[in-house]
Image 1 (spheres, rainbow, N blue to C red):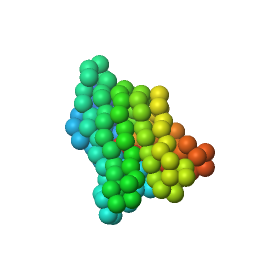
Image 2: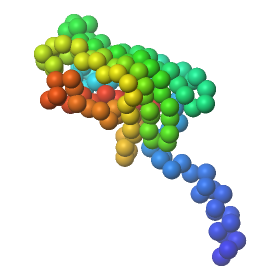
Image 3: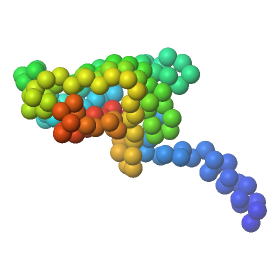
Image 4: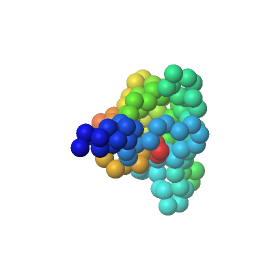
Length: 140
């Protein structure tokens, strides 16, 4: 019985703790804000580039050019299992949210991949209007 334990142990130790969450992959990723119509415009995109020591730069946007609505993101990320620690600026503008004015979030924030989701979601969800919830997602 002990022999089987030693044969299986190395396999178990190599399994990821969070199988739904992959390591941060440099390159282009889908980026969305739920208020911007995916059917007409598709997701936006962000570019993630390594800076070293598990730190990454991130920059991108999603736009609805007909309604002049958008979300932009620019900053840095640190990755830890299912969590991305972001520092930078996120600006969104949606016609029926925050009286149509841009909402700017700066400073540190956290994105998390929870459950079987295939994306990291910003955990600071309250828009500048104090009423609306923004679901801002970066896809694996």
